[in-house]
Image 1 (spheres, rainbow over the protein chains, first blue to last red):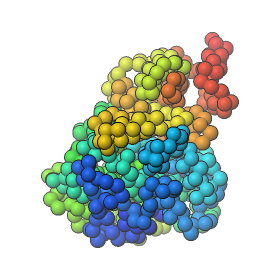
Image 2: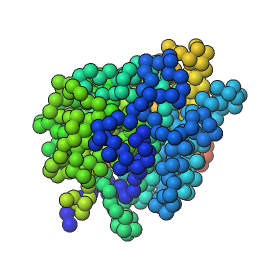
Image 3: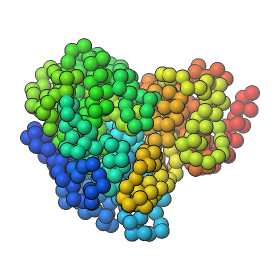
Image 4: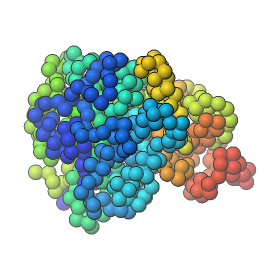
Length: 386
Length: 178
């Protein structure tokens, strides 16, 4: 058998997600293929002061109750998964605002005591919910948080620090977050339409997910199914502006080039791109600038954010699962809500489902506030390629 | 490596990074395209910024015009501000562990260098009144030479010292070498 691994030697053996489409990768995948968005009118809090009342909300969660939205999501996500995650796994949690709704609740109820480090309490809860002994670590780098967490897990496996890592991610739609993004003028009045000529901002979404990353040797020893291979990653910063990306795409290009180098492949080996595709004028333009500079020939590009909104710190992790599903099914999902493709994205992005041909290797990109960029290169294991 | 005192969260990080670069004999000016990254940690995340922003928003009748306050509720923002000023184009992220030690940040920074993500990484911690950053890289990167290798540094990180004590330990190593 040809060796499919890069120098990272890191494989994905289990995963699951909770999005506005519901629990499970299948529901999200089928939702995207149906071209029906899971974005809807928000009634969790009063949206009167804001530009929009649209968001992609996980159904059935209770806001401002004893359990945070994130804790509720993780309980649903890990329910019935006893034994799936080895208890000696390391734990990495990616998030931007964690259990911010608990702080909101305390302040609204005029309690004098605030949680001094919501992050640590969240880690403790997650290790109990996921039945892991490790105390874990939090990674946060704006909207690249979970793709950075996957990269760090890959590096830890490569460095033989451990052979099993649970990477979990979550972020929720709370009034705190919604008001903040509204203040930044980042939200579209209508459901986000990435890469559309008339796009005007993102739609916030909430979600949670996990992937179990193992060394190939442990995965084989435990006879685990290998869902995907992490071939390479690249992390960079635009070093340009706190609120908007560098439009020339040069920061993202640095991340993609690093990922290609680590994966030991060339641009032509990439045959699918899962873009960050937020629906903001700046992000989508920056990404298309970067892709057109990197790739001589146009590649199929899609964004999931018209379907599930922008799930913030969880975005890269959820998008990793959808990218692997796309490779497995040999289908490129449609970019939901896309009506009139922007000139720069023509020939790259489509509102329709497309067949995926060739040697299946996907490039996944995320970018965020503070100029942060992440690129991951994923492929199927040779045994799973049809 | 440096320990400084002062007020202000982003500002203290910015100053500590500049002084750490200077201490390593490197240029601490803003130069475009620097292949340098930052990993930062602290003990309380950004809970104080969260409280400030939320109180400001509620006191203004569920409205706010303080964009900067919201941006600073993102845990990595104080690091990004430094990256933007110094023009660092390497990885920039915030991390925290339950034991709140610096060892995790330094270990990941070392991994990033090994995997070619950056030539130089800064790893450290920023608190309200003090901040400590270490400059990591391959030995040949530093005109003044190195203070110690990663293995020796990890031993010090794991001793649960406060920042001034930690800084003193590294100064001792430097003096012994000289």
